[in-house]
Image (cartoon, rainbow, N blue to C red; front, side, top):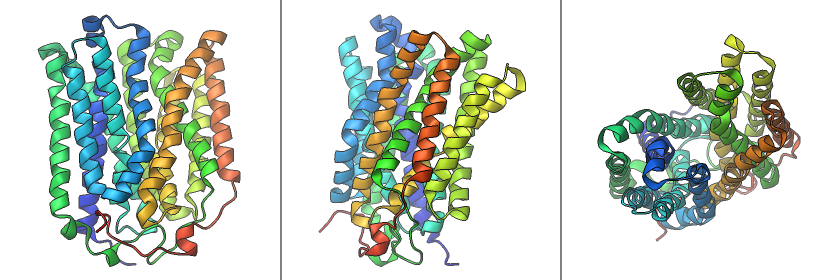
Length: 412
């Protein structure tokens, strides 16, 4: 077995994981300090709910253009710009004199956040054979729940101590530091990324990519699973407090436990996908099945240990699938088109995040039943798993006609 080019791989993985954590830390700083900001701007519950929606709406709008710019300008340039853009959005919100300008700052941060995944997908894929792709992309994606955990743990106490505006200096500083590190990468790009002949992309190299479904089944899967994931995250604490009589603190701990399970799940699903499955679509279908079982268990158990196990299973499967999904995207792309392919695939994920959580909220208001709402989530999750399991498989174009690998830097 050929050894991985460890120096390049570790640097690329560390840079990309740090970027995911830093930008998530920045964008999810707003929900973390929502109670304090609400008092300052007299925000309604609907406006508070818009915090996350604006972030992912902006990301949805920006994902496809960001993918194209990644292929055109190079991954390091796009990543540095995205990190700086999130910092600008957070700064605009921190300086906002009115609720309108505060929400506008969140929207700016969301637009920039849409530019993070395409370049990090490119950087992590460089020089990694397919037999390690899902694991490394899943490791990269652990930056998302890590950033969310840090925002929820660190920022509220800082905001209470020094004020919410001053508390946002921390994510701004982290983001600008991450952008500076990425700019430093641009100067050292030749050393880190190596020569074009050393890159292994979309099946070009010592291994072929696996058979993959078309973009239609992939998009449907991403739309449903991302929407159900964010609905679970958004409504879990309310469900536990209202239906299971949890305290707010215990419910928050349960949410944190699901994030921790998601971090572990991303690593385990990535490693298992590389080792045991010819196509990443198979493990994605299994992740959907596990998520559906967890959601059903959430309804079936009356509480106690069973409830906690259900929360862990949903986190492990329902939050743990993202890295494998990006690996499947990479299976369908070549070196020069991976940024664009990532942006197109993420468009479906962000659309699900924007649309499904409020629709589940409307459903709950109509039926006034948490079991009915969770059953709807179960049904959609099963459909997503079936779409991925039963979709026709084809060999990616990169296997049928491998493209000549090239540097991920700007074209000359």
